[in-house]
Length: 259
Ligand code: SF4
Image (cartoon, rainbow, N blue to C red; front, side, top):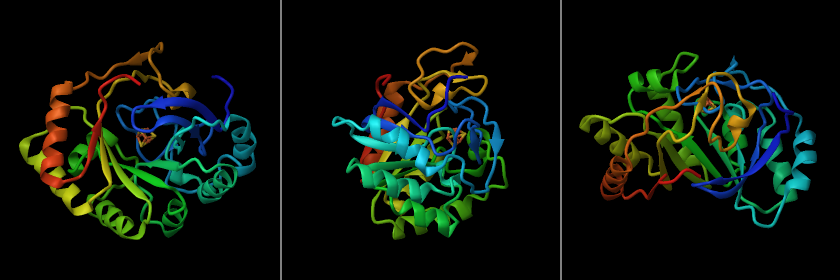
């Protein structure tokens, strides 16, 4: 495996433009989920335990030489669930001392019940929460939580976070198959309740490595020992995006090209 650095990229993101990545998790992929489409490959370590994986000083040392004028965002995600990093808040503060570039945290939301996590996340400019399903059954099949997962607890925590957070809250949804009409309506009703600032609809457009791959943090196009999930059509994505926008008034962006 290639040498680990907690700062990677910049990569071109269809959602955020030129994005420099920060990985507070480290060489061993660590998450509370094991999503079927995860670009990191199989998650190596399952955890709900916050700990310091990468020292904040190491992040800062690697960050400073990579700061450049044309960055649109600094994205904290990397090799797993970033809220598992005990020093997440410390990292965001340190980044903000070095640059005015907005900081986005991508999270699966599984840790939002912890006050310490909410305290750290409030420092970000944008928090983007994964919402790939609105039924426990689909969560089980798509996100494959490694721990007991209670949909109503997750939703309660997310609604509470919505009320508390002064920054931008977005929702990211990976669509793997055609949803039933009832499920689509349930999703729209949830968005009406949550009122996020934007929804990002996505479809699998990259290979899923069969084993852990550090480069999975970036924009993989081709890799050995990988599988491809068959993507839904852009037409389906467009139609769903239009319906969401009309019924919930929440702005929607969706991926149309491989970027
Ligand atoms: S939540 Fe993210 S890092 Fe964790 S398994 Fe899913 S896609 Fe991978």
